[in-house]
Image 1: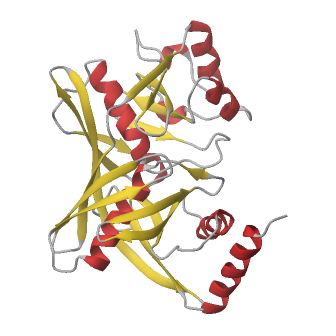
Image 2 (image 1 turned 120 degrees about the vertical axis):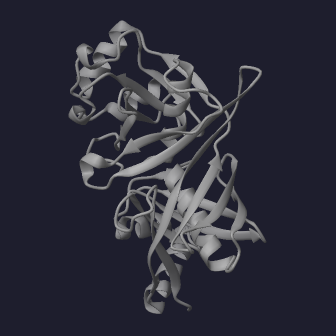
Length: 307
């Protein structure tokens, strides 16, 4: 049994050991969902991504947190695209990749910067979909659930569900974004009933975002799947201009400052797509021991057997 390679990169930064760490498994053919989940839990990153080559420039991708598989996420796709370029496009300055996910496909472009010390990677997340806007009672409940008050909310705005592949319940704030903390155990069920998967903090004056797992136990460092919806929200309400790139910040409070770049495109005043981009730097690469690889194969086969 051959060893399984994996690669560690930092995303949404051009400085090593900052931004959001990611593990990329480039040869995931045959691995079961249970095995991919176990590997993600072993690596202890917020997310890991598992790739299976389809053809010259397209891959099948599965994305996992330590708790579940996601149908879409930002920083794993950007980090994986940079990794593929580093491995398969040596000497080239640009490449383009198609990531085939569970429910959609995403096009990603990679550009070499700083003499191959880092990469600039951009994905087209498509146009944002706006869902439910919370009423006064729902807003009061939500703010209390995340340790915030009505005074923290940006005047005249209400939380709303926005998605570019993964629906977030965006909470627009004027201040105290760093004070947000989930204080209930059933937030996931409640936001799901509103049409969202996670909550996303958006502090408008600082263009700062935050996101957590639904128990509030793990905070994400830099969240590409939230940057698109947050950018769309900012443009819709006039805080940023369409067809111009702007920066969103995350991770400062975790000691991992990250920069996410967003451009919300409009044609004839109608949404045309959202580009989310950032830098990626290489950190390390390694192999799982062949003995462990054999164990993972057995685990995959066992999980696939009929009950």
